[in-house]
Image 1: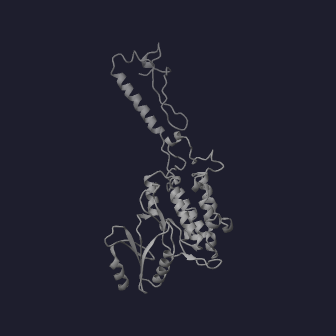
Image 2: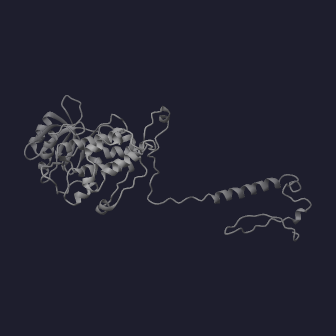
Length: 368
């Protein structure tokens, strides 16, 4: 870390604890002297080429102005190291989704305002011919823990892989492979790789699982979404179309009925369509409720042994209670009339494949 850049940074800001680190560098908590507004300072890593990458990222961020794009307040560059100061957020979207699944109802319909802000950020970049190339939940930051809060604000960060398209197509394979579009594997892609990656994010938010594992599945596997609403399913399917020319654009994504709240053609039969009657608001939305997934099928417990044991215990207790009652043998209701008690015998029999206890009377011989 260069001393000159560190002196300039500490001259204007009070630097606090380390918030996180990654391949691009380190992030520290900071704030202006005499001001309590929470900020964060990103410091480039000590590796070859890190300063050039962060310098390009800082310049790109300084040229952008959108509510869903990370705002840069100051840049410190001494030629050897680059720092820049940005807004401090609560945590990334991936951590927020983990808490959302654990603490709240796993319903993607409650995250429409989050997805809309994510789409607006990517659409703004595409309007400037900028491709991010690393769209994933870890690069979206939120300002609070509760995602269902309508005031929850989301910004897109980490522009280390972003670039402006000055030529027809790109060929560099950058970003995270699990979010790669088919044309990224072909080394011939454009802006719509961000549409595919955002579709993967939405699929993970809706099902808590990745749709594809490797390149073969990306090229051949068809996604199946049966546990979510038809409107959300249609949006994800159009964003994950394998042919780049047929894939939806970011402008069309923002106009999709699931994000605008407009009813679709099958709104009458769609579960997630909001009814205007206040009576339905009294009931919870169960359109996205799912059973938890397990690593192996759970064995169904057999109930009949417990029921049989309870029945036998009840019979034994009843017989013991009757045996200590005076005259129980003569007043027994099950005793056939006219037959002495000595001619009655209880005999177990086999029934079918299992052994059951079937009791009947025998008069063939006298029991002494």
